[in-house]
Length: 503
Image 1: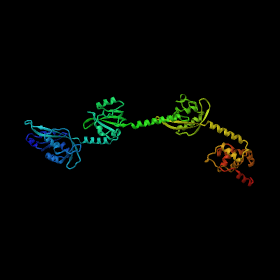
Image 2: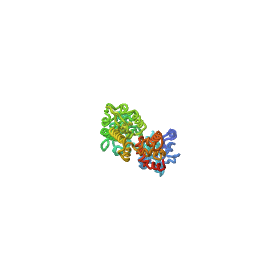
Image 3: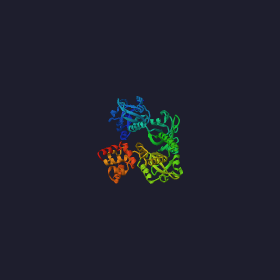
Image 4: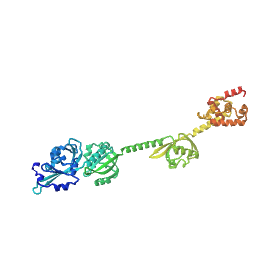
């Protein structure tokens, strides 16, 4: 066909045509019907990385030898498919997109969008000149490549649908992993066939915005999964353009972990509530700030006499539960300082009157996002009464110790007075005179007898006894004797030594 076209040089003057197209941003290559490249503007030369027409090629064949073209799908163009060949052959086409590389280098340097133009001779109606019009769309396609790489690599689930027919045109791996769909399955459907707006919070608004190509705000939806069941997500839509076509980018946030966590938390709270209510230990739950109670169990009601109606919404102090102000301050200060109590001995007031001796324990917990305190009480009233009776019995017996051996007296004394801290004072912390007084106490002597034995005044003995009590942390003679014997000191050796020396 090229041999049948009339050469341009014989039919038209190029001078005026060159002047018209020289300053265009689009690249223009003028080709004679005999396949000679007549002229190219600066834009066309720049789009091929050359400065002169000769470098572009003097003929169609030379152009094809110097530049390699391939489609965007990486398929090489056959010789007859080159746009420059097609335009000379008389084909009419528009928006053919090709990647262009130079020589033997297979790496594309430009992306061209090419269209053809045939100028006819008005007198004879035959093609007088063919024109190749080129746009450099490299930057646009590089941006699209970067977007596609980012889109595919992004772990956040996403799909893109074409607004013209609402068919999916892209889907990333995040969406496939989240839903279990296959890529081909998604690409074969529309936005309402694989419904990304199913059960959306404001479905009608989302559908309206999609039809108008406007932003779809975030809303919850439930995607139907191919294997059955649904997945709770947040979906949002953003209008974008892909290859010149209006599209909608849908992005998702998987809320299923949150739903599972909420369900687990709800079940955990239900188990806690059942355990709390059934516990035989009196317990209550209150706010950390203000100590107002929000829940009590049956054991608490049984201990204090308070039902929910009389105490919920009130603090222990407002309900008059604390038997004295000092105890209330101690407990509330410990909670304010962030300390958990363990077996702290307190006295509380029962609603019907009387006092209850308790061991109270507290622990900080969070319920529904609020800082709370879990209270636990142990009734030790009976135990305390038994201890008091035992001490009173011991004191009554020890008023006359003639019928008891020294070992029995020591054991009774230990029951009556707890042992002081082993890390406290020791025998060596007492002065020699204090040790002499303690030795006489261990023999069971009273102050007057000790004064006679040591040859000092009764007032001096009383002062020594007071200092001994203060140092070792006791307040009774029997406790002092028990303290000394627990440390291997009964005073006999000290008294014997004193007698040998004539003391």
